[in-house]
Length: 181
Image (cartoon, rainbow, N blue to C red):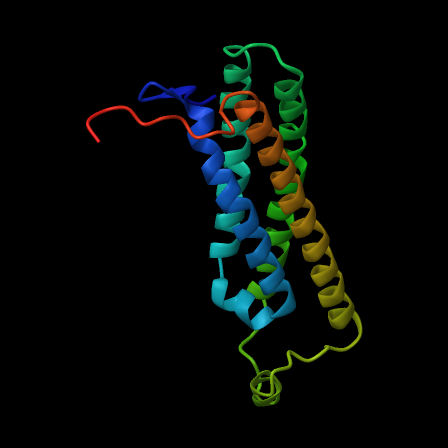
């Protein structure tokens, strides 16, 4: 499915950095585009592209992590990290689906009318009327819930991975310096 070792280093250790950056970035972009639809129009196809790159990075990282799991000592902390890691894909899949939906909704809208431009200049986006306003409200709530859920899940996964990697692997006291100083 993807590389497991890159330049002699487990690929998982490198790939996690992509996930840790892209998941919160995608979540933030999604919320911004849901709250301010004029920005979604400016983002254009970049929002779903960002979301698909984020989505693809998760199974690549998970695959490399599963390989690494079989090449380290068995440990309950590693097992916990693996279980949490398996839970990120549904979140990023949901972020992608909502990003595509927002892009699809915004791509069909015409350029803003002068009244819309005045509303936007005043700092408001306008609540919309009827179904459009309700759709925007749903998009905002969904983006907040999915974005927060994905970021929190990413945090828990990263924290559990750090616990697994670093427990009992460092000294709380400074090591003495050696050499010609």
